[in-house]
Image (cartoon, rainbow, N blue to C red):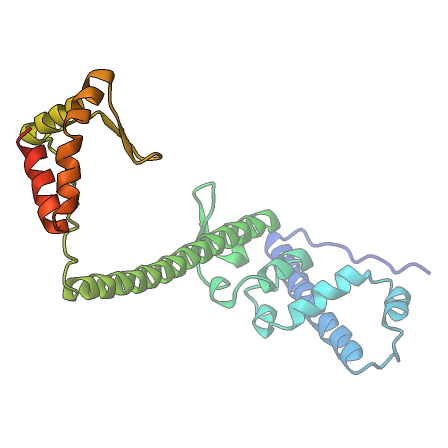
Length: 249
């Protein structure tokens, strides 16, 4: 048998009070249902059959998860949030604790507290907070990298400073001097050598004899008695006569 509906009042004040009363009941109901779902799950009162039990209650697992999340924050049971539905309460419950009570400026330019926002606006705030956190994290990583690089540069500078000091204390090496020998022909000796070769011919090392032309050969024959006489002299005297003859041309 269907339950008979109560006749609604024509007084706007009464209707407003009734709406606020049902809103508080709805908010409290979400919080209390979440508490009881969490209690059953944590204490395993259904012996591992939590999903089957939710099906018996006709509660979707995702909805149950959201209700349990809301029940973790007792401040959401206050009158400030009693008018909100499950989705809005869940979005507020997943905000950082310090962001739940302060006002936020939306893209539209409006400034609202989380309790005054719609689900879309709450998600907008959460996205802005996430981006700000990512930016802060990237800045912190960049600062850490800069500090590490500064330490590395300081270590490299210390090594270079030690090398420079070591080189400064080491005496410089002596300059390398290259000596080049230059042979300068003596015109006097060269002229004597030419006269000697013209007189006695070019010396043949293989035969140990002078290659003389016919004219010089005849001339040498004339000095043969002189050489024979020299052979009779002591060796030193013979060398003296020979050298004297050569030098005098």
